[in-house]
Every structure is written in structure tokens, then in C-alpha cells.
Image (cartoon, rainbow, N blue to C red; front, side):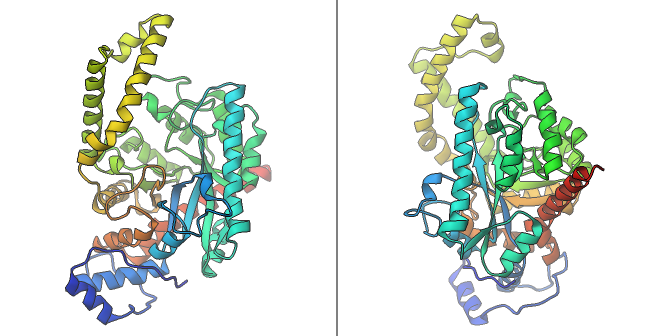
Length: 449
């Protein structure tokens, strides 16, 4: 594979001129050793990283979508104001994007399930429309690792489909097979809020859970996903749910967009015990370039700034903020009234967050992101680590803020001494190996083994 992309780097003038004078880097079949090359200049490092980036298959496991951008008139063939689209993928040398069938958590009733299912089908159909009607000459959907390699060899981009939140399954378990038939190759059992299948990580701070991990229906869903060959995504469910999943799943699991909690203390990140369990399971964690998940300084600033702003707004409205234990002791009427007051506070809070908190927070960088890769590699081994962005869903960091800047990740990995083979494993090899393993387990289950 030989792909073209555009370097998007902040370079001094002398280095830009030197790179231009050097021309295209030579294509080599050998990998760089896993150490700094002696006497290598910055220009030589960039040239070496460029050659590696051209040769490896680059894969991002999490890019959210808005179906308004998948119409005949407005779509990803255009350089839209989105972090991911075909021009940006081309410019950054990003080969594979997992487009996400995301559904926010709603009520656990017939109306909620119906609305969630309609949302999911709209997103499935939009992804297929892009690949099969709008731009079949530029992008194709992959269902297996062989598909990925075949499609990239033709020069086309690859779309894969992940399902963020199993809530749209409702109470009809046959929908899991339907989602698989539509191309879904991973699915999380919850998002931000408890689903009918699993508790969410969002319950951790207040220890507010619905199932104590997985529900019985969630356990059945794991067995069905193993049978069909759908990777189980543990990025959003609760810690208990994830530990139970490790015990139940016959196949390796993935965390499609999570980082290391030891470096950034966020409930969306995996702690060391979870990471070690993932290693034992044979899975992979797709380290995510989400600023408040990779920079503890940014996360703590955001958390403290939000809390301070919330207190200020509550004081303006003469509302007393209560601790979770105090809220739990309220009767139903008083609790409903308090929750209505909190909705009012948060409605006023969100427009002010960007100007008063986000804009003043320390930046998260590609170096911060790769710090998480380094940490997880050192803890559980390189073969269990991958790369994701969460673009168009809140992701993006300084240096990798859209698909056109994907090369900067390879550059930082090369700077730290990762070889071409290792960079290829991080970008795509490890994730595709897990997909192969999951599909192999499914074939054995279907054969009665």
C-alpha cells in the first residue's frame, strides 16, 4: 500500500525548506529499530515517520456522525466542518474510520426503545448510503480484517461500523443479529446512563447503580455477541459490568475509546486492574485522544471549574446544592422538585462552560496522548493497545484535532522509538487481530464447539 497525505506540522522555516529539498523519503521494507537513531535530525525523523505512515494501515475506532452530513447534497465527499470526512482522511493518511451508531440513553420503556431503534437504523442507513450510493469509488464498508486489507490496497478509504449503546436493541434480542447483518462489528452495552443491559460508568461517582453490573439481559447479550462475532466494547459500562464481562465472554473484548486511569482519573478510563484483566482476556484498549481523558491537569481544571460555576449559578438562583446522600433521603415530591432545579442550573451552566471554563483549561497534546499509550504498553504489552480519536463526539487534542493531522501521532510514536512494525500494530494490527479472534470464536460457537 502506498498512500498520499499532507503533512500538517508547525515547522520552522528552515525545516520546511530542508524537507522540500529532501523530496519523498525512500520506500524501505525494513523497520526502524525500537530506539532513537543515532545522530538523527528532526528532518530525518519526519522523513522516516512519513515513510512509515504511508506504509502502515491507520485505523481509528471511534468517529461519531451526524446523519445530516450523509445526504446527496451534503456529505463526506466534501470538506465539511467535521473532524472526519473523506478529504481530511486523505490529507492525514487515515485509512479506516469506524463510524458510530450512537444512541443517547433514554427511558427504559416502549417509547424510549422505539425512538432509540429509529435513531440507530437512521445511522446504519446513512453509513451505507455514503459507501454504496454517494461515494462507492472512494470508500467501502469492511466486515472483516481481510476486507480492510483488500480495500486499502485499492486506494479507497474504509468504513467500519461500531454501535455505541445497545439501548436500541430494546427487549428484542433478535435486533443484535440484525445490527450484525447491517455491519455492526462492535457494540457497548451502555453509554452515559444505565441501560437495560448494563450499568454505566456515570454511576461511579455517586455509587448510583441499577443492576450491580450486568443485568440478566446483559449476560444474554454477551453470549449472543460472542455467537455472532461482534466485539464487546467496555468503554462506557461500569467497572463492575466490565469485570463481569471479562469473566463471561468467550472472546476477547475491546475498549473502543478509553485511556489509562492511572494517568488521568476519569471514570471513562481503565484502571490497572481492568487493564490487566483485559490483557488476560486477550483484548485491546484503543487509547483515546479526548483531552480531559489524557490530561489530568485539564480534567481537574474542567471538573473544578464546572463545580465552581455550578455553585455560582445556584447562589444566583438562591438554590441550595445538596450532596447525593442528602438527595437520596428526600421524599419523591421533594426529589422531583430538586431535580427540576438542577435542570434549570445546568441549562444556564452549559452556555457558560466554553467561555468561562473550557477556554482557560490547559491544552492536551499528542505527547499527553502518547504518554497513555506508553503507560499501557509498559503495563500490559504492546499487542493489547490501539488508537482512537472520538472525533465529532468531543475528541481532539492539540496536534491531532481532526483526521487531517493523523500523521502527528505516527511522528510522536517514531520520536519515542517505536518501530514500523509496532506502529502498525498500534494503528490497526492489534484491533484487527481481536476482530479475527472474535469472529473465529463465533464460528466455533456456531459449529457447536
